[in-house]
Image 1 (cartoon, rainbow, N blue to C red):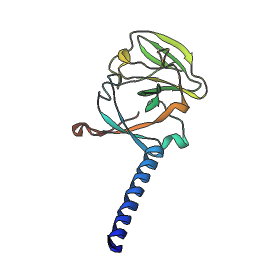
Image 2: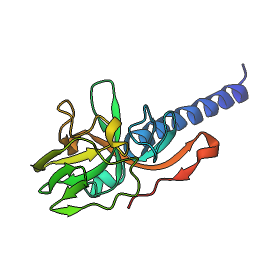
Image 3: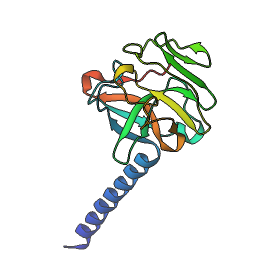
Amino acid sequence: MDAREKNEVWEWAKSIIIAILLALVIRAFVVEVFMVQGESMLPTLHDRERLIVSKVQLYYRDPQHGEIIVFKATEDRDFIKRVIAVAGDEVRVDRDGVYVNGRLLDEPYIMERAREAYGPVVIPDGAIFVMGDNRNNSMDSRHPSVGFVSLELLKGKAMFVFWPPGSMRLIQHP
């Protein structure tokens, strides 16, 4: 191998290393891809859809009411749910719907109202209360194994569905 060929191989190697490092930095600090597993977010998100989740908002603000977020639920699993209440809010669920601080939420995005009552509970500091849009088929903050979600477990805010191609869309957050 002559000097010109060695130089070309070195240039390719540098380009590949830079591309890999850039991809790792982007994935760690900017955006990540997640796949929806299950039907807890129907009709908003469907099983097996893939979405882009932005991590950027987590650096400068806490999640807001109505946003769809991804969080670490177990060592092996991430959940995708909607933020219903934040620290200091009181939540109550009954057959009429979900009440936050005594006000009935307008929720055009849900599949159906919850059949079981819950609360009232007050969300502690450093946590949020989340629910799936498919209220009767969602393991969310009402379930003892999930409970209040610590802000430290958040991975990002769902922004864009990119797969399957026919379902491509921005995710609307009220």
